[in-house]
Image (tube, rainbow, N blue to C red; front, side, top):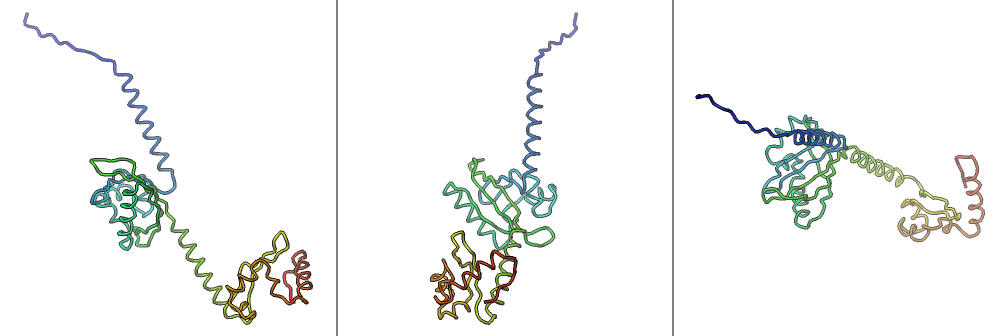
Length: 239
């Protein structure tokens, strides 16, 4: 009669839809876990440049950028986002790890968006290939505070050494062991000079018992007085 018939084939895709939904939810949960990790995680395809395949929210946070800002910045060669003075070293470390199939473990600097230097520690390892190029999985941690603390400790050590070297006589830092030995933690050059030797020589000779440098006639008395001082409540002892 000229009418058209429409044939339709129906397939139950409920299971596939359920699996796709679960996969999406699992992926979202995994992303939340990764973003909660201190520092950042990134994957790069290494050729003649570092092409960013993936980065967690923590990567742009290290240098003060938003995710959107960082996504635009890393479209080119990601290695150019390191501090210029460290770029060559970063490339060398990565290439050595790829060639030797080892984990790259080193520190380098990046520039924060406000201009100050950020110190970063990275662990990087090849995890596969894409288009014939190695994929490098990197875990970054911001260690700027640690570096500043180390720098301050060096400054304080230099300050301490300057003061000690200008004191008359000598300085010794001594630890009383469980076996009642006076172990030297530090001897100044002035202390060594009192004995007619360098601080290093004094350390080698009397490092396990600093009282060994005291005259035998005085050693028992000095040892007794020091033990009484350590056991007592006084905070100063003069011999």
